[in-house]
Amino acid sequence: MAATRPAARASFGIGTVKVRPGHTREIGLPITKLVTGSELSLPVRVVHGRHDGPVVWVNAAIHGDEVVGVEVIRRVLATLSPKTFRGTLLAVPIVNVHGFMAGDRYLPDRRDLNRSFPGSSRGSLAGRIANLMMREVVAKCEVGIDLHTGSDRRTNLPQIRADLDDPRTRALAEAFGAPVMLHAKLRDGSLRAAARETGATVLLYEAGEAMRFDQWAIEAGVAGVLRVLEALDMVDPVVGAPPVAGLVSRRSGWLRAGRTGIVHLDATLGQRVEVDDRLGGLSNSFGRTLRLVRADRAGVVIGRTTAPLVNRGDALVHIAEIEGAQPPGTPDSPAASDGFDALGEIQVL
Image (cartoon, rainbow, N blue to C red):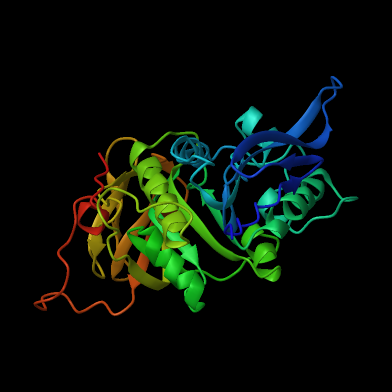
């Protein structure tokens, strides 16, 4: 008697399109029309594997000037074959299409798209885009990775922000392998908050600077996304160095300028600091020192400004306090890093 062949996977439906198993399809989900009458669409690539597995999404450019994630997604997709892929991946490289085309963080009405979820099909432009993303992408998935960079004139150490108290989220955050995992509260209106309400497991990746292709941020993002897909058994084991055990933080804060002036920062991403360590200084236009910049807490530098001119109160250095960190001078305490090679084998130049 002939063996029964397993039933083929069903086609995957998104918008008005059906994607057959073992195939990849690029589609545009209609958002609105431009003043010219041209259609503006949300770009999605569906990788519908031949074999069963989870349904996952990865997105970038919710803020239109955050371009690192767009390149991360391009490089990840270049490694995937729907013939061997297990499960389904929905890749949305540009969520804020208006902002991306203009090189702007926000939408034309200055709304922050990442404060507009879950949105409404009858709301503002931001609300309509958010609703479309939730309805056609997030609602179909069980896991999502939201890719970000620092905001204008700020740069971030590769880091995962997530609910580290949820076991599955924690496991996937560890699989990603970023130098730091930050337990982050949900923000009202964010994609992560809205997706969590649907039951999805969400990781938020932060790395690099807006409007720049920081290669170290891109490479860490590509490796991390592929490791998450591997942990979900959607791809075969990724060749390369295993992930470094990320440091865990549950509290962080920005050190702010005490004076208006020209800032000269010595602090580097990934650097270990102790309370009162000198991180730079503020001077006037003649070079006279106005105030030193000193650490107000012990931890690791996970973000810093790239702006040379600052006003009093501007954010300068973001320091994450490390869970379980030992006092300096103890035998097992990690050494300070000039970049963040000791935390993730990635060096900022």
